[in-house]
Each structure stands twice: as structure tokens, then as C-alpha cells.
Image (cartoon, rainbow, N blue to C red; front, top):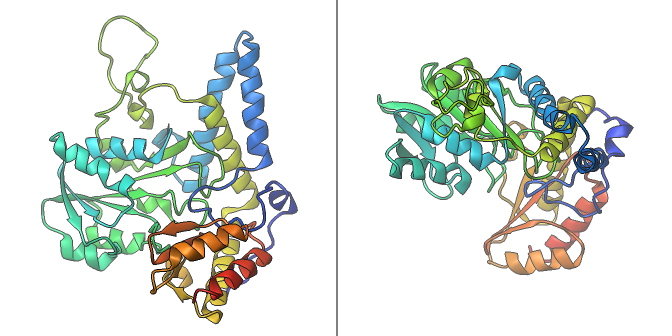
Length: 374
């Protein structure tokens, strides 16, 4: 198991979640700095001073710039979104041709394509079934000459499997678009996001910035080929020139904007991103990898089935415990009674997810509870 470099003490001190929190794949408790930013921006809005609106909406620029630095995309190729689904709908209604989508993807990465198909904007082909992972081999077997894009999650929400984006890119070549739902990977794993032609994330999970914000980044090819079909009044040139004339769409990623977003959410997002920058995504990802590996090993020792990948290169921060006897609900209830926060997935699975701030005592406590159901 790799040894993670020490994280700055200031980063570790920024969070205050209770011991036993193992549910970061659901949402990540925000830092104290995020709470302070939200309160400060709300205070600015409450005062209503001259220039308050400009100050508030400047948070959008701060968030876009930080996201660009962390992902490797120019700021002009980054737009903010209020949620991942919002960005994925932009992609689904903007892509031409046939799109491959994993049938077992999280529903947020399936319904936009279904709705776009129903509206006559897209042709899709679903790959695999409910438990099928999107691998380069699956994509290669599903390709046909009319496929123009592949949509995939960077990390599978059910197993924690980290998609081989480089392998998928090699299979589809440079002329097809690679569209990535990155919410379960960004902030948790050190991933080359520039392999994607479009990637969308939300702020509420591994970024730990709260709900209501996220970002979409596009390659130059993505910007050129994905139409702003759902772009609104803030996605055009001179949006404040109210002249009763349809304006041309912007050339940068802001052409996908629909309207102004919450400056409180954007500011919280920006602060969370800057905290990741300060600590170093490499260090955070290494600590998450080390802790997830420790949890998997402890579950092994306790006789609990582990359904997540064991190879660190294929794993992010999610470790799934399996219950072949169908008693996952009882085990989940016992975890909750012991103060352990995790996610129940049906009768046979419990998803545990760790972050860089997760302590060993929480892992030991959760393992002790689950051992009774092995």
C-alpha cells in the first residue's frame, strides 16, 4: 500500500465532520472556510450597497479560474453549472450523432440522453446492463462507424471502479468525443481530465463545497462540436443589451449558460477548490487511496465481502461491502446506531466512502460492526 505524503495541518483542521462519517460519495461535509465564505457573501447581499451585485457575481470568475487550474483546461473553456445533471443535459442536447452510454451508469448520466432522444436531438445506444462496468473492451465491442461520442462516469457509483479514460480514449480515437461525469472522481483521485472533451462535476461530494454549484470544462473540439442548444440569455453576446434582437451565442464555454447562478454557491465552490489547490490534489488523492485500501483490507480480515476493485489504479474513495445473505439493511441499521454514516444499496450492498480526513478509529469501528454480519 502506498504511503501518502502528510497533508498540511491547516487542511485537516478545516473540517469538523463527526467521527464515523463514511459517506463522501453521497456528500462531503464542507469546510469551515466554505461556511465563512457563504456567510460573508450573504452579508454583502443583505447590505445591498452600491456594487454589491458585481462583487457577488465575481465569485463565478474565481471558481472558473480555480477549476481550470485543477483540471488543466483554460478558463475560457470552463462554465459553471448548478448541478451535474444540468451540465449533462447541455451535452445531451448539444451533441450530434450516436452516443454510447453505459446502461448501469448513475441515472443522472442516462436520463439526459433518454430525454434528448425523445426530443429528437440525439441517437443513443446503451451498453451492458445494471452491473456492467464501462471498460475499453466494452466500448470497443459497442463501437460502430456512426458513433460520435461516448459518455461515461469517471468513477462508478456502485463499485468505486475508476474508469480507464486513457484506454477508452485510445479505443475511440481523437475524432469521437469523450464525455465524462466526473463527480465521483474529481477531488478524490488524481485523474488526467484533459482526456475528456467535456467533463462535468458538482461541488457537493469530494470537493466539499456544498450544493448548488459545479463546473463543466470542454476541450477545443468539445467547444466547437457541442451546440449550446439549451443556452439562455446569459450565454449570448451582449446579454444586457435589451434590444429585442436575438444575439449570437458566445464563443467560449459561457455559451452554455442559461441564466445567472447563485453567487453564494459559486463562492463556496471557489473556496473549496482553492483549499484543494492549497493542500494539493496529489496529496489528497494519495491519502484517500491509502485509507480506502486500509478499509478494504480490514473488511477482508473481518470476513466481509469487498465488491470494489482491489487494484489502487482502478479504485477511488469508494469501498463497497457485499452481503450475499441479503442482510445489508440490517447491517446498515446497526452502523447507523453505532454512529457510522454510510449508504445502503439494496439488500446486498453497503457503500462506504472515505476522505483524506477519515480517521482509522472510524474504519475500525465500522469494520467491527460489519464483522457481525459477515
